[in-house]
Amino acid sequence: MKINKTKLYAKALAEVIYKNENQPSPKATAWQGKIVDNFLKLLVKNNQEKKAKEILGLAEDLLLIKQGKRKIIFNTARKMSADQKKLLHDFIKSGDVVKEKIDPELIAGIKIIINDSKQFDASLAGKLQNIF
Image (cartoon, rainbow, N blue to C red; front, side, top):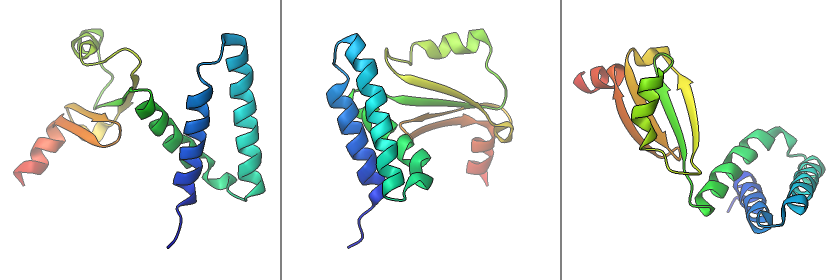
């Protein structure tokens, strides 16, 4: 059985950060820097530095889940106006990590992705795809 080292590293990093995030403010900053430095040294030592971006992304996702928060991505064809953002404000909970991405291939509408797993597609491209 092959072990997925990327997921293993991400899980370990998320666990360490989660356990140390409740340190008093000055200590928290010092701990975070130390955790990152030691983690990067470990990746270099084990010749895994090429996967650092993937590992950090997975660790971020795992940490958000542990904290009870969500990562929400709003994909739109064009930049959202202030009124459009206001409409989506009720959907966002305190502590959620929100990203906006512009994808001209959507033509119009919006695609909302939560934690890289749940998706609501109200884009014109999505509707056209369902027709054909």
